[in-house]
Length: 452
Image (cartoon, rainbow, N blue to C red; front, side, top):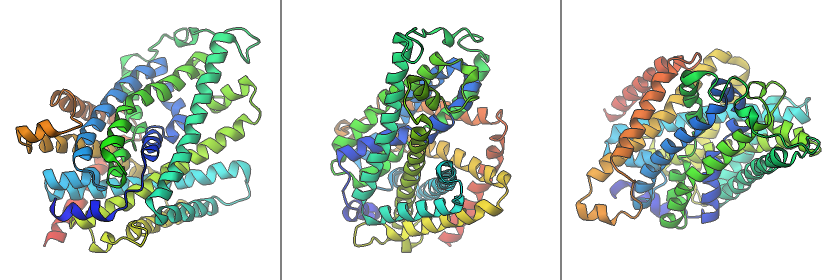
């Protein structure tokens, strides 16, 4: 394993199977489901359920590719470390820094919305104060030890899960037994009586695939936890194999119920669909409950981002693709210097919220969108090279193999290429296609200068 062997020796294996399962679940259920689901529904109508099913199959394929490597070589740098080893140093450099940048940008967005949700209860508290408090608390948690991160993520994910299960059970009660509707069963007609199941045609379905795939961003966090999992050979395969069922139940289940209960073209126009369902069932304080859930979902994404950025910088230092300064651990076996550096960038975000025009922030965010697709593409390409590097005997010994290889890999790569093409047709995302190459050129120049 050479230079990277320190990753498994020094980082503490403090994440139990319970932590890994809920981190995987939390990674698959983002704020987008609570906050942004209405915009994706407007694109495709009820056929969004097909888009999530297709997207779920592709994500499962990508996660199986990552899982094959993560179980065979469980390191915290995950796909950046594998890219460095199997595709070459520049691939490791590009992947690590792009993924770090993505989570910093996502962190900037999450830290901003924390202030918005706190303002719902306490309008007099300035947004930057809430953002700063969240930054300090989450940084502190990540500096303690990996078990503290795992415990926070476990309970944050549990809140999201309970809210969605509540929506599904309550919604089924309304559909079949007329709870909250005077005892009159609602039925399924809303799925086809408002312009049909695919009201915006195949074009609407295709364009919605872009938003659907971005809502899955973060699920690859399972691979990064492998270097600190107590029993990666057991917990990682279990977490990855359950991804497809979680997508079916939580995304397709909850969105299907929303569109059965309410006309798809009305969702989002009268407030959060989650609030509407809870209100109709008769749960008191539904808006307050959902505000709390979305607040914890934002903190969960922020917590995951802090964990990911710290591990990526630590691994880049070990690869000699980042400053050696980030390769040191504190007494709790956490990469404290890497975490504090990322935290410093996010502190800048608290200040920049006042000065950076929204358009500039949108352009930076668009690079983060491409970064997710880049990471997934690198995972697939690395796994193909990883498999090629093995002897036939070593291939037989792989305990968690990618099914139907290499056809599944080609299918997923073609799908990701389609997503990039479709982005050109969505206003606001078109910028990413031009901004991303500039980011890659900057990284390449940085890489060449570093090697001199």
